[in-house]
Length: 370
Image (cartoon, rainbow, N blue to C red; front, top):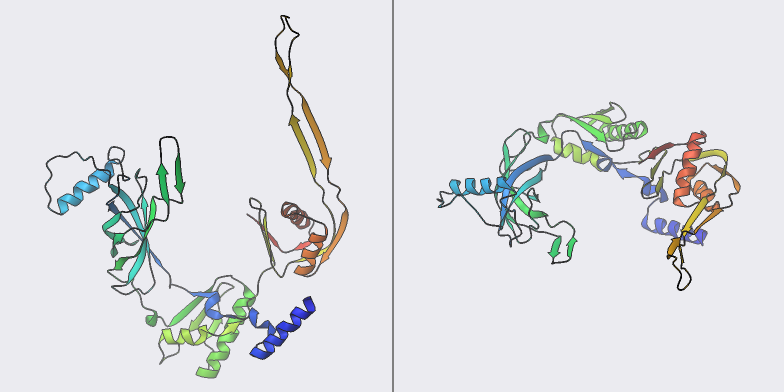
């Protein structure tokens, strides 16, 4: 069955004109990021109005009451009393990401989260909220109806919550008022940062870019800085954007480190394709202890002056799973998986086995325990 499936794949590749190893080739722009081209965090404080008696209780959230008074004063609305009893307003924090090179007028999504004791933001509307950057300047303004995925239903004796009703989103709810400083076309030196730092991958990318620039511009323009960064000089007479797009589509074969990631909380084990194990003998068995309490009731004879008492009855059973000694020599990932499966190891057992192999010095890979 395996050989037949493999033969079908080769026929498919031949018909499509693809090599079987084409899946290992990835585009350069998928494995690197341009240094300086990133999102910018925005933050603001605002009010959500129109809630159905699920907003902040102003006694427990005095900042909400202060914000309402300040908003009414700013709108020129006089107040006959300084006391509010409304429950349809909630104070919220508004966050957003300003994309790199976003122009004025661009719309972006915002996240809204309650900071008071509001029970739900469903049905609310975010009023005009300025969003500030890290330098204290206003880069966007947000306003609009909230989209809440969670809900909360409460009765006299029970309540049901789903997801988080005190967090919401406003799709396209913010408008960029001032673009982030900087322009890509002003850069004459591009620094590419690898998403997964590796010396071999960095060298492969440099060689591939230099092949392209040598053929098109008659000189090599890329050089490796370290295993994480690559410097590419922008040739004269071409925009930086167009130049980056010209080599971003080039493909390389990135190298992957020999690494095993273990999550002991969930029992998840991720094994990289480059992991190898030297010849080692393994045995693994489990010891199970079962404690059962079966209390017995002892009653006195009829018409006697005795008392009914409960006597403890504890039963303890010990079972040890048989563990056989096996030899594992796995120069490939498939052989390692087959060896562990032949031993009948479960995920929790595999974690213990891998840690033991690493301690014995037979695991030729990095073991990352989360």
